[in-house]
Amino acid sequence: MNILLTNDDGFNSAGILALKEVLKEYGEVYTFAPKSPQSGCGASLHTSNPVGIERIDDYNYIIDGSPVDCVQIASVILKHKKIDLIVSGLNWGYNLSNDTMYSGTCSACFQALIFRTKSIAFSTNKFNTPLSITKYGKEIMDYILSNDLLSKKYYLNVNLPDIEKYPTYKGIKITELFIRKTHYTKEYYNKKTEMIQIHYIHNDITNDDTYDVSAVENGYISITPMSLINYKRSDYKKVLKKVTS
Image (cartoon, rainbow, N blue to C red; front, side):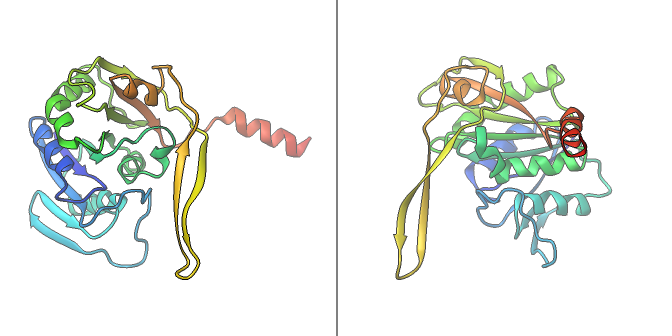
């Protein structure tokens, strides 16, 4: 199996290095990762300006761009190889609920869906990032493969709980995405420099372990299937009826 590995924390981050060691057991790993941290970049990409590439060897490339850039560039450089799986992570911090839409880690997997390639995003607590995937990465990969969970129609968003709080995880749960109501508060604003820092908080929670945020908080590994769009033809018909009636 040919595996493309990327992330949004940078080529030399501890998370991607630990995840690479796990993935080596499952196939040939090609790493195309950003030169610098790209957290919160979402699905940004370079559409007109050239992107710098540093080739380390045939299996490792440093890209001066976003995770989406990395996936797109890899598709060109590796065009004579069939990429069977795209893996993004291990992210330094959770990607749960609304955060998935801002995440560079998750956006790399959205790009994989556009390319009709199976993909997985891995994220965990930012204070002990490498430890969790080193300990549980093989178990998760074996679970995904043995249950035939990979698909070209959705990617798997995997979040691992805090390994210090839960040295032994309770298990693996297939979860839904919990939609939070996010409230923003102004934390810092300097009128002289016209610089502002925004801090956001979540004031709504759930204790339902069928949702990603609760499952991870309660010590489970959360696997959430994420589609490119949540499009329903019935919704189209409802709106069309409103404007034509």
